[in-house]
Length: 120
Image (cartoon, rainbow, N blue to C red; front, side):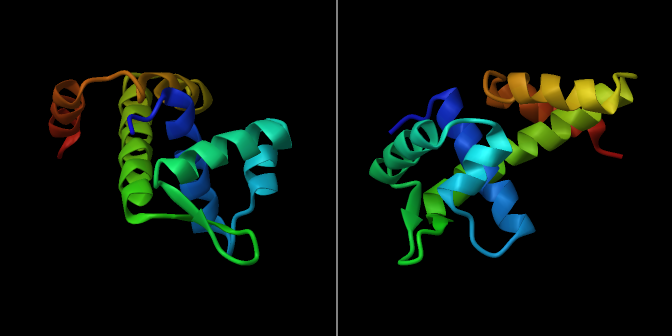
């Protein structure tokens, strides 16, 4: 299943929240993203169908191996692109917001070139 931008955003959010706390529920994702609970429930259902997320008996969302790979990929893109934009003189908040938009459409080739450029 190919992930759309919204699916990538949900995976990244689950990944970030799981690093900050023990157990991530759909309500946590909804609050973090500013979305309604029904919207998040629908998206999580699609992620489950795609094999990216499972739920434990307490309702916590857990990334599958493939979900974690995708989430880490998006998170790395966000981090590196934010760093690049900050290096260029963009303010941190704007850099993060713009990186969030770019991370979903940038090609692998261009992203790898940026990573290589930023290496010390």
